[in-house]
Image 1 (cartoon, rainbow, N blue to C red):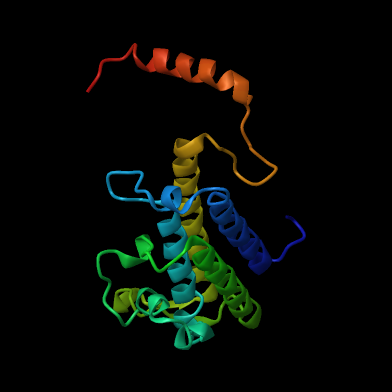
Image 2: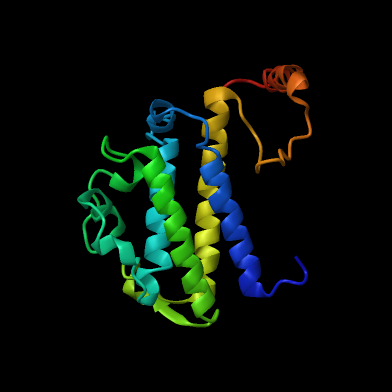
Length: 204
């Protein structure tokens, strides 16, 4: 990492988050991808859809570089990536019946390319404006936006980690790199030890 310039370093961590999020969807059925896994409705496919909207907004509209396919996409792809359209029922956090997982993932990959083109075209101090932020802080730079987007996507990749582990036990930080110290066969004993420790403390 020491030989990368600051912009490339930020893009590197952005790409890690993108790839981790998509990887967490692989091998699952449409049902599993759409099933809400928390009391607030968080689901894996919704995370992909939301991050697609995040990147279209921050690496597109903010710098006057709207994602070009929006004008030609079917209506399903319009409202939740357009900051001028009011959000309805958190529609970028879940997929409708007409939004198959493969299509959303493919769209997200196209959005990556558009975002990377924005990053390549601009300097870190290039100005932009986030139209959905408070006007007093809406003026930004590419550097500011990249830090914000990396932080947001890494947070959602962490959400995806937990959701996927709860579905089928699959865990790891990246494909081919689990970053887990405890071997899979030793995890039940490890979890039991942690549970026993926690239960020594009073509830509530």
